[in-house]
Structure formats: C-alpha cells, structure tokens
Amino acid sequence: MTSMSAEKIIYEEQDTTVVKTTPLLNKIEFSGRVDINNLLARARKEKEKNDKVNLVFLGLIFSIITIVGIILSF
Image 1 (cartoon, one colour):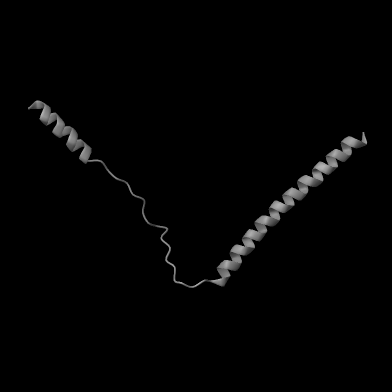
Image 2 (tube, rainbow, N blue to C red):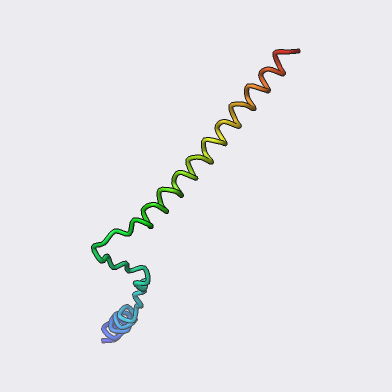
C-alpha cells in the first residue's frame, strides 16, 4: 500500500506543471485596405539598403584595383 501512495504523490507533482504561453501582443488586424504611403516607405527603405550595398561593393572593387595597381607598379 505504501507503493500506491508514493505513486499518487508522484502523480500529483506531475499535475502541478506550469505551461507558459506568450502573450498575443503583436496581433495585427487587417482592415482590407492598403495604405500607399506604407508601401512607398517600404520601397524607399529597400532602395536605400540596396544603394548602401552597391556603394560598399564599388568601394571594395576600387580598393582592389588600387592595391593591384600599386603592387604591379613596383
């Protein structure tokens, strides 16, 4: 009979587990309309990001050309 009480205690401990859920703070409701200003702002941000990446690549290419030119001149 003592084994049953031990099993019961273990079972009761397992029942007290806490389940954590994340709150629904980022719930977005769509009204069915599209705001053109939001779309244009997103397009501008993407274009600025692409322009920055292109400038980095251009700087890298010119740096490589300059370094190769300096090495070949010696």
